[in-house]
Length: 325
Ligand code: NAP
Image (cartoon, rainbow, N blue to C red; front, side, top):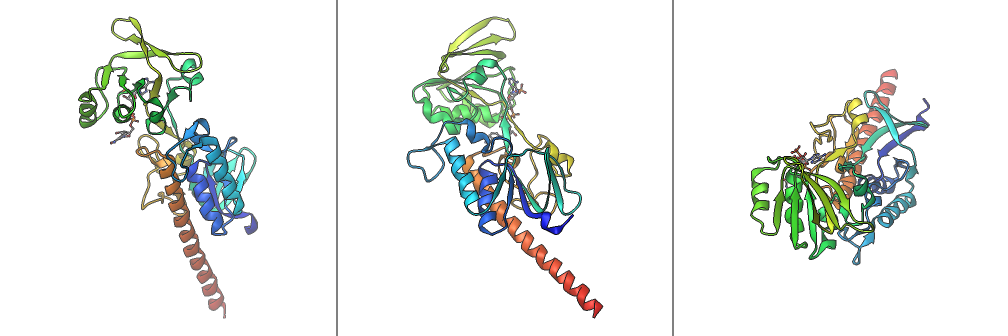
């Protein structure tokens, strides 16, 4: 393969992490290629107003924020390609990333494919997403001032989100499918001692009620089979996330038990020259701004790596030439 076909860096993913990495890499004149997927922009394309991304006094719509990031990256020369990465080979250099149309070769790769919130996959839950159904209390809790909301799940996220929501909501009901909780003792105790939080255990959500917005949920008691309706205006799924890492694990990238990419030394993966940013390696913060920050860090680490390697490569060429004379 001709060297001209080898890109400096391929960035996989086009959420805040990937696009921030693209802005930095493009401003460093590295002409990054961004494999943006078929609909670029990541999770924020499915949200309405984003009020906690710094710099927007009155908030900004999620899709608008992502469109701005795309245009900002393009302005400096990033190439945004609407293709999905379907496989990767990081065992040899240059690295290879294939889409269903093309193979891209690159000296470095930044993985920023994000993670997707898990849902119960009820038809009503999907229909009311953005209309009272959310998977991010930090993003959307503010819209539920003095409302009644439910949080689904029994892990640390559910406890954290329930506690957070009590800042706004007048009542938070945690609905969990078992009697025992996966959440750590301290997080569970904190939620249990919060007077605004009540628990319904051993219960399954059957349906989110409402036409234009959430009006309630129908749940079933797993022990008795009895059904009941709880009136709520907000529904928060907190049943975990799934990082998009299958193709990278197959390409030798180390992932943890839940599939998140293991980060070594800030943004490095176990394969030299492959970097990572954003939710794909972060089960903890999962914020647009933290993903953006990590995208910046990954681009700077990648730039340093390329510079060091070009120096090593040019020295090797010099040594070869010297040895010939
Ligand atoms: P998690 O620990 O995997 O918990 C997911 C919860 O959702 C479990 O209670 C699970 O029920 C329930 N669930 C899963 N699928 C379900 C389904 N189809 N229907 C109903 N319920 C379902 O996920 P997480 O709470 O998001 O936490 C992820 C990681 O981040 C954990 O390691 C956690 O400790 C960490 N975290 C830490 C903090 C903190 O320290 N501040 C905050 C948030 C998260 P079962 O228990 O029955 O399986």
